[in-house]
Amino acid sequence: MVASVYPLILLFFCLHALHLSKSQPFIGVNYGQVANNLPPPSATVKLLQSTTIQKVRLYGSDPAVIKALANTGIEIVIANNDVPGLASDPNIARSWVQTNVVPYYQASKIILIAVGNEVTNFGDRNLMSQLLPAMRNVQTALEALSLGGKIKVTTVHTMSVLGQSDPPSAGVFGAHADILKGLLEFNSETGSPFMINPYPFFAYQDDPRPDTLAFCLFQANPGRVDANSKIKYMNMFDAQVDAVHSALSAMGFKDVEIVVAETGWPYKGDPNEAGATLENAKAYNKNLIAHLKSMAGTPLMPGKVVDTYLFALFDENLKPGKGSERAFGLFQPDLTMSYDVGLTRTNNQTSMAPQSPIPRFPPAAAPTRQTLPAPPQMILPSPTSPSDKNSGQTDVHNSTPRSASLAHLCCSISILTTMLFVSINLYAFII
Image 1: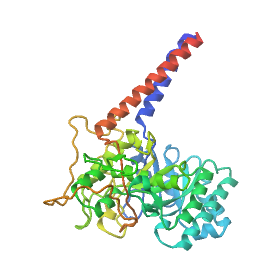
Image 2 (image 1 turned 180 degrees about the vertical axis):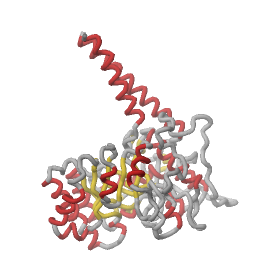
Image 3 (image 1 turned 45 degrees about the vertical axis):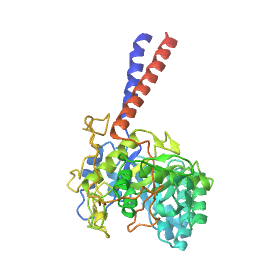
Image 4 (image 1 turned 90 degrees about the vertical axis):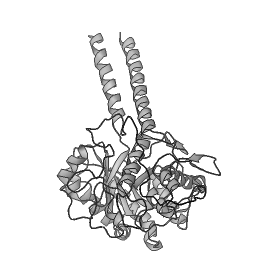
């Protein structure tokens, strides 16, 4: 009897380890709805279930979407952008939570509420000063319903919150540091994350040279050395995230979790938008996913995978601004892929990249010059960008699809070996 239990224990551990090796709980996607041609929520949820995406960020609290996501296990970020209203009256916050959270939780796995979006980018200090009381009122409403420890409250920032990001080790917050300190105290007290929108695409717009493009796309490049830490950064994404980490540390909040609320690359744009091509979009997203799967973390946060929400699930044909604003979608409204980055469950789950040979997507349509100056020591874009997104810096241990696949395989083997060892010892103890 006891002996017959052992194979079941071993099978359980092996299956659990295999599940862990295949899931990507750190990869999410932004589901924007500024469009008039999107599929119904039910079809969208079926699409999501056909992928390895584990999280969805909404820009509001559309009940149809939240209900469609019920019982899927997909984690949901919802938002309330009425910062003045939430700040002015706790009853408004309480009513909103009762209407937009209580009817759907727990069937719909709401994990986070974002109060406002990129408010610190508007330059309106009066509006910014209302963020903290708005967040506190939502938090109080959740706590009154015993949801305070289950659903977190935060807000989303652009890279413009940094007064300096070059080099990453010198990252500090800028003009609104006093307001940010209060927000970070709230994040620290409640265990909610600091959400940021790094966009290497905009960094390339500021410096459209081939070596910068390779740096932004996680491709082979000479790297850029942080003069203070002496760390060589191999990609822009890591440098941006580490600059935020440095800013948090400088203000005394190094333990506040960083979550990437948005990052992506458009597959087309206006003629003056350098690098907005399908090849580059595919390269950025595919290589970013491979880097996240490698679990390498960043140079200042080694081994820590930052939860990252890709921008975006669909193109949004009614968004204003440059052409690129309407061309970030991984999928089209007819549910076909804009390009394949390996997120579908039908793909090889062990690796999100082609196995052999491994093509590196070349910089497409990058301006060529007769003579190029030496790469600057960690160029990071200016804090502002022409759109509602922003850019930053980078580092990666030169993660490639091959290295990511190898690291993922090694991680899976390690987990299986550990579980086998535990099972054998458990069996020996039982008998």
